[in-house]
Image (tube, rainbow, N blue to C red; front, side, top):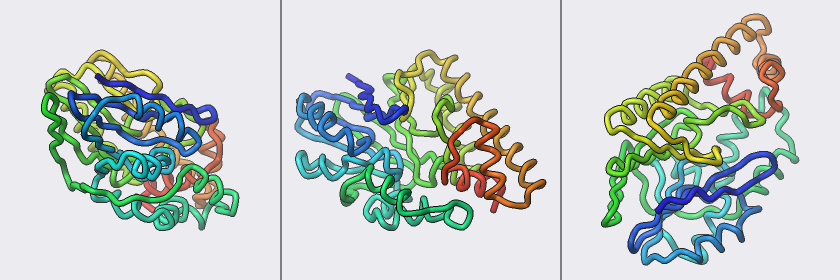
Length: 279
């Protein structure tokens, strides 16, 4: 059984994905701290002997309840190796994510307060993999894959037998309030190509993502949204390049991009600009 557990935060939805097997429960991402009790109550309803927490990447809105779950349920935490250090040291995480924009974006005390308000304490990652790993629950087998782009440590999960694919922010419909955060443009496109091939090879008919309230169903619909994301990213890259050639300033370019796309001006737009411009 799979449950897309929606946690609403402001105008956004952040998903924790529950995968139930006979004696095991897998939870993909733990959401924001503000929704802690809702998540703990949902876990307490489940029946399992083994609990695994798979963290798709080291962003605050995906890890807010790691410590609370660790303290109450003592699960096994799994991440990609490139996310491990960020997940185990939140000061380091903040410096590597928000801090990278400080020369072009006014990172102040309110930014820090907002970021750390989404999370509690860091936990140790029990299993960290490089390219891929298998997770065998008995009746279900999953392949967990490195899918960089949104961050260098992003991962995805495929259940070939049940034709299911789970990704984080490699895929979404760009309806959120900020410019998509990208650390690796080339990796992003390569990861889109990889999941497109998997969808075709295994006739995937259900895809769950981090910020879509409902699953994306039907192979053709999944392929359409993959292509939509590819076109969106390439158009975004072209727009950044055109504006940067005029401005010679990443700060001004990022601000204009946010206006052009009707998005809030955040540090995300600066980090993405660096990746798309090769800075």
